[in-house]
Amino acid sequence: MNPETPVMTPETTQSLPLSGLEDVYDALATAIDRAGPDKAELFLVKLALLNAQRLGSSDLVREHIAAALADL
Image (cartoon, rainbow, N blue to C red):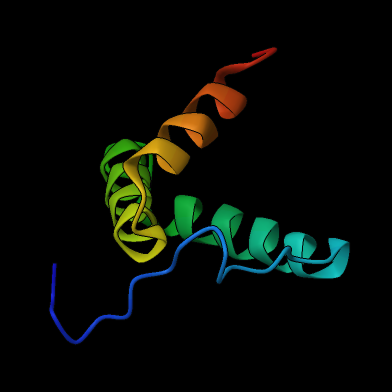
């Protein structure tokens, strides 16, 4: 991890309002399309790792992974 990157802990993060989630969904869908079917999985893994680094908590990331897997 870059020592200049601030570590985000659950105590320092904020919830994103629905409008923000819609913006993220749109940006994510566009990025997946840009990556193309051959690179979409790699893009999503890179994005997940970048977000995990920013969250700064492997436990929280594991919780998010479990939540994302639920009801697929």
